[in-house]
Image (tube, rainbow, N blue to C red; front, side, top):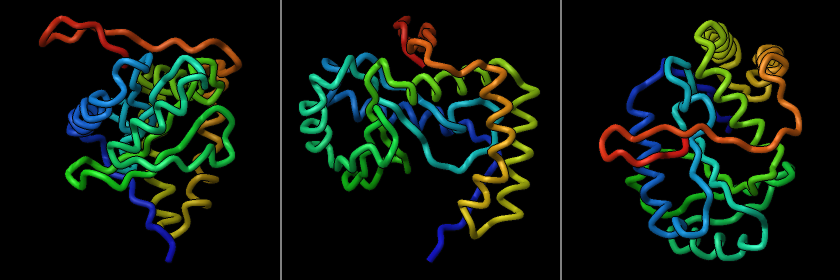
Length: 190
């Protein structure tokens, strides 16, 4: 049975959902990671999205990857391999059912895929007109192709490519945004 394509308006709860998952992950990996990044459409205020939190754990390089796999396994994650995308390792989740629905990836800091995720997210966070346009295309695509994720992806691909060109996604080094947590003053990667 094909999965339904469901796109909903932006939900403020997604920030809290990310933080809940992030804190859970950090219980096992805090000392061996560079950052835990909220990526994908749920990470952009105002952007319509499939209600699934996408997360990249950033590590220095593959020298610690076996340790990362072992520690994530202790939390209920199962390494699935790179699923055809170089330098992005996917994890399935069979643990705590109370966690919000999410996709988890681990990327070394030099990963082109990580750079693509961060650049795309940061561009959208700084361009409300692009958010509006992309939201409309995603919502239209979900209505046109509710039973075909492949057709949905194809429908929104030209808009994504246009955004890639605007944010000049190339093989640049990884840079995450930093912001100060207003509650406790800590600087955090976003």
